[in-house]
Length: 94
Image 1: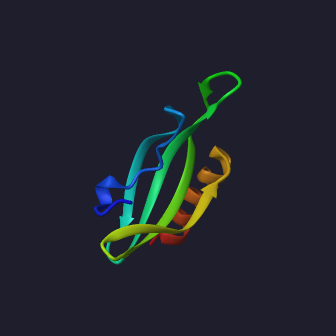
Image 2 (image 1 turned 45 degrees about the horizontal axis):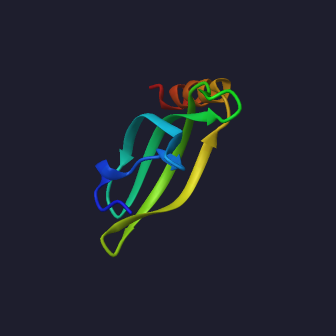
Image 3 (image 1 turned 120 degrees about the horizontal axis):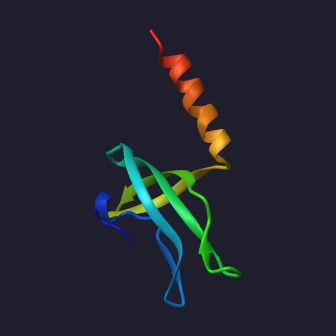
């Protein structure tokens, strides 16, 4: 488990093969509860190629010196991501 925010990743290996590849991350909030937006790709084991970009927002709680995953929201498509962005821009407009 990660003890520092910079150590938190969605990279995941099975049998030495990277099946979830983190491309980028943005820390949205820090503290006892930390929220991170990740951009990543999944490996298709049949074709051995990575998927289109995917996105997930994860919340972590720091407890006993280590960050523990508590919840996540997967953004299901680029279209859904665009709708989220558009809606937030509309809501945040002066």
